[in-house]
Image (tube, one colour):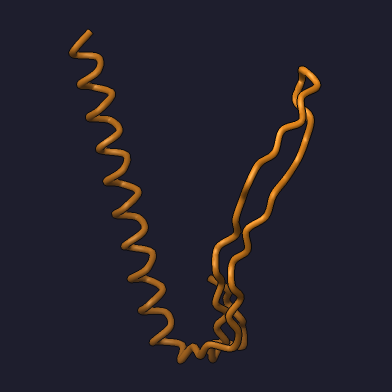
Length: 84
């Protein structure tokens, strides 16, 4: 049983590492793209927090909370507005 737990923990650590690596690589690629295409900020939208309500399968009222991330829009010299 300890071997299974060790394998699960190792898998989770590896997965977290891959997600962090992919996030860093994406940010580096975006920074290079922004520089190469002379991108300028044209808009900034703050994220929002919202609540939801629904009824579960037992007829109970369920309330949830969600959020959207902040977003920045960039106009680049290729004429495209990119939002990240």
